[in-house]
Image (cartoon, rainbow over all chains, first blue to last red):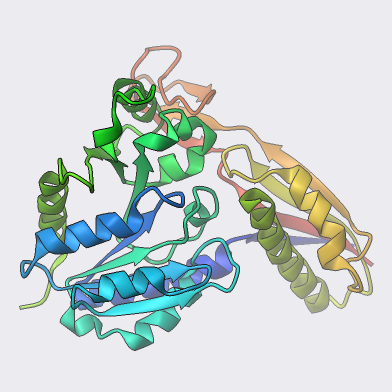
Length: 220
Length: 117
């Protein structure tokens, strides 16, 4: 007997992601899903962003890691609410993990929630968390050919932060080539070139983020 | 490493969906599973097949054939209306040259149907 199923492999996750999304919208919180490969600078970007946002935006952070709480400890030093998720081996965060983490965060007190995904350019692209903004980081050390190797991540993200631009010239990373590839596969993608080490370019990114938060804010 | 792990997770998801629908239809055995897979979905069917036997062991889907229906990546040009096959993830329209392609297929990843007895 043939039985029609027509069920998406990610449907179960999508349902929970939509619930998270409604909750963020209701509370006026911009949730940012931050994705990158290990070592691209996710934790550094969060740290520098927190410094630049200062009191302008009430920010909370969810730290996703396969194991350990090293990153969470670093972020706690900034005095913002941090929840650690250990995925216990899973290579990405999913919507259910976020729902659970939200039990430990008071969204009422926040404008922005930065979710640091597990370091990986493959799996996180497929699991919606309910975020309002998907941001990915590519570091100069990784090479400008990554979009064609990890196309889903580059076509699903809305923002690309190119980090470690202080290393430009040391290798063969070509920013123009990267821009041209991105333009053809994801014309709407917003690109920021920064160095978390020297601070170059970070102000543009932080100011843009503040504007996005303000656009979404519903709270008095 | 991460890619292999990745396909293990999605294969488990496929098995969960298949077993739930098999159970709802009172199946004793699952003979075949048809999965619709777009070429932009980022899934390597070879790895899914590799894990399939592992995740269905000792279930009523053990030994079921896993059949992939591949869906090509296509876009619709919002400038001239041309429908074209996407190559190398390039959304530039091959007819008018405008960067106005909107993806219309290729992201599918679903369990389409199962054959049971």
